[in-house]
Image 1 (cartoon, helix red, strand yellow):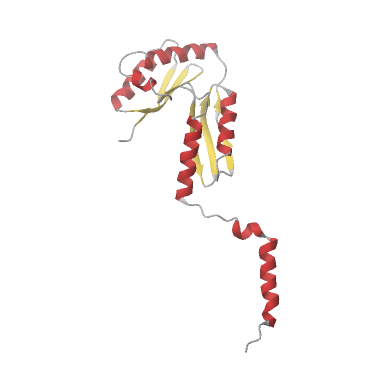
Image 2 (cartoon, helix red, strand yellow; image 1 turned 60 degrees about the horizontal axis):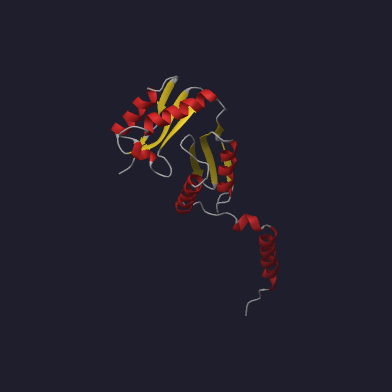
Length: 183
C-alpha cells in the first residue's frame, strides 16, 4: 500500500494557488474566429440600427480580439456616443476605441449635403439606393470636400455617383470610396 500523506501538502498548495489567483487560469479565453465573427455581425447590426444614423453619416469598425475600434464621421455628437454605448453592451466586447469624428457645424456644408443628396438620389439611375431604410451611398461633407462611402451594384453606378457629386456647385473635391457589392 502506498503512502500519499507526504503529497498532501503539494496538492493543498496547488489548490490554494488556483483559488488565490482565479483570473490566471480561467480568464484566458482563446480568441476564436467564430466569436470574432459573431462580434462583427452584432456590431454591424447595432450600428445600422442606431436611430439617428443617416445618409450624411458614415460608421465603420474593426474587431481585433475583444476590442472594437469605431471610425467614421457623424454630423451629431450624440451619434458618436450612442455608437460607443451600444457596442460596449455587446457580449464579448471588452474594450471600445471610439475614433469617430464629429463633423463641424457649417451652413455651407449643410447646403452642399442637401444638394449632393438631390443630385445623387434625385434623378434616374441611382434613386434605388435611396429607397432602402439605410441608404447604401453615404455623403460625407467637411469643409466643402465630399467623400462618398458605401456600396453600389456596379462600376457604372459608382461612376455616375462620382460625376453627379462633382457637379454640385461649391464642392472643392470629391473622394469616391464607393465599393462594389460582392456577388
